[in-house]
Image (cartoon, rainbow over all chains, first blue to last red; front, side):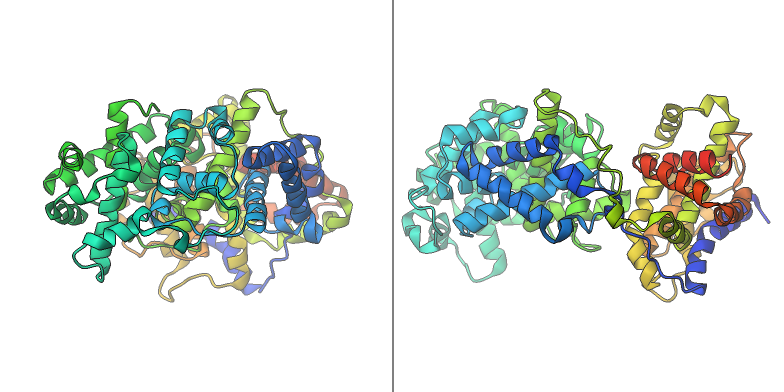
Length: 320
Length: 303
């Protein structure tokens, strides 16, 4: 028997034996869940954690009665059914991280109970989670712009200029933003202000999924370029681009493949404005890794565009 | 980030184009991530396989990305406040003591421990690490062990083994061990061992007469939670093999069955007081994972 065989055999025996015993002895696994090992009540009612909850509520809703109501709502939800919300805890995450995550979800629940569940316009959804969140805060909850900017960029989370610019774009494209805190239906968007409607005016075949997707992508590109390069967002001349560009964009799909990790990092950095060092720390990556992964992804995108005959300068030039 | 910076704008435009135009049809494997798994991803405590699965979900599914974004942003915000000294650290001393009304006492713990054989496997590994630690003064500190594992591979932290086993109790309880009848435990473990060995360096294992080429790496990737557990055990076995090989005084894996027997035997012979000490020690050390468990076992059971 080779050394390998011996080691593998022993390793296999050592690891499989307990598992086989589980079958042979038909044992039941009544080991109590780890959640019962933690006194959640003591943890949640700890003044330190209550202060965290208050800070999260104020960050979400601004200082005032609404934040206090939201805090009380979260405490009630957490303590329901003998702290049942934490019953599924298995010890994979740190208890405090898990609690913060539950609290954040419950604050969103509170917002939806209070302000309803309107759906954001499709074009806005495609810009990323940060845009949706800002749309909720500004257009539905009617929170003050500068306060939202300050809270959204607190703790060095984001560049306040970028947050302010996003809000400006949202307001420019949704004229009725903030006029009502009740549900915003699709009908409240006029045809002229609805970019999806504008797309339908010039796409060749809106009935095929590929055609629709390609043209949405095309429209989004125009929005993002105008947003980034500070053109007048509501007046972007999207019809000024030739059909040739649309075909070229469609062709990019054939050349472009991004990994899930690349997609995640691009979303977090460029759509949601998070800083790379924060992302690295939270995803267990070395500090230099996000930069390297992103650079590689951007290089791939650039190459796919070039292969399809597209360069950013010419798109931007054609728009003007 | 500076949005007035032209290179940044160009990068953002490229990123946006890429996200809109790339193929998003990645195959989703495993169940959607739970809130705890998202929190564990943030903490860097998901095993590599599950981390890859969760990453696919949050990268390509808007609904799950929104949940992840909320988890990330909330915890970053709290971390920033703590770093700025605006929040004091949480005190877990009270929270980690189970309230009397919710526990079944030491017998309950003891029974549960005996009914969870996978813990026996962890305990065995813990003992290997613990004995190495006690025999080799140079490894006689948690920091040194951390450094050792980090030097082997960052993915193998001290908490790795116990974390890898955490999600698999439910699957073990159903005894639905394998998704395909032809897949054996040995095959999956072998795959894990081969993967771990390749990650650590083929040459190191070749020097031990373990040739990766001879291992079965062609089977389908693990699919069920239990297969993942076996796969992870295989990977850990590779690390432990190297660990033992690098330290001449360390027990080899040949001692593992005997140590496992001893573990169960000693656990069975424990009196109430000893089990109580073990339980208290393990409870207090659970955050430190496999080494905490090793310390608890060696200090309270085999002293």
